[in-house]
Image (cartoon, rainbow, N blue to C red; front, side):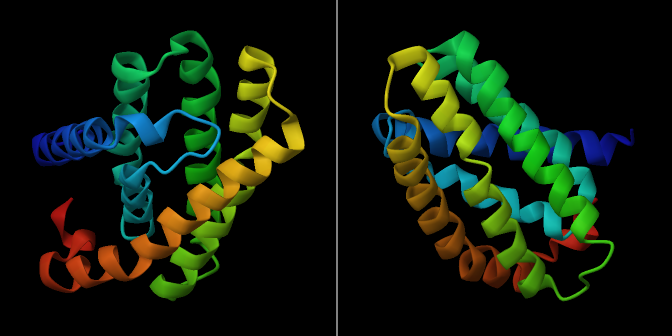
Amino acid sequence: MKTKTLVVNAILAALYIAVSFLIQPFGFTNIQFRVSEMFNHLIVFNKKYFYGIVLGVFLTNLLFSPMVPYDLVFGVGQSVLSLLITIFAGRYIKNKLALMMVNTLVFTFTMFMIALELNLALDLPFLFTWFTTAVGEFAVMLVGIPVIYAIHKRVHFNKLL
C-alpha cells in the first residue's frame, strides 16, 4: 500500500472516530444516528477508502461501544458486507449520485445485522429494532449524499488516493 493511501485512510479512520465520539450517545442504541456513517459514501469515489472506513468502524466500536464483542463482529461485519456490495455495484453503476443512493439502500437494508446483534445482546425485538436502526441509517446516509457530494466537488475524493 502506498504511503499516501495509508495516510489518507488513517485520517479517514480518525475522522470517523472523532465524529462518532461527538454523537456517542446516539450511535449505539436501538435508534442509531451515527453521523460518521456519512463517510461510507467515500467508497463510491474510490474503493481504497474501504480500509479507512472499516478501521474507523472497528476502532469506534472498540473504544465507545457498550457491547464491544458484539459490535466488533456485527458492526464491523455489516460495514464490510455493505461496502463490498457497493464496490461490486460500482462496476455496473457509473453515475456517482445513483451509486450513493444504492449505497444508502444497501447500508439501510443490512442494518438487519445490527438488529440481530441488539436482539442477541439485549433481547430487543428483532423486526422493530431492524426498523428503527434502518430508519436512522437511512436518514444519515440520505443527508450524507449532498454533503459528501458537495465536499467532493471541492476536494475530489477520487484523486486523493
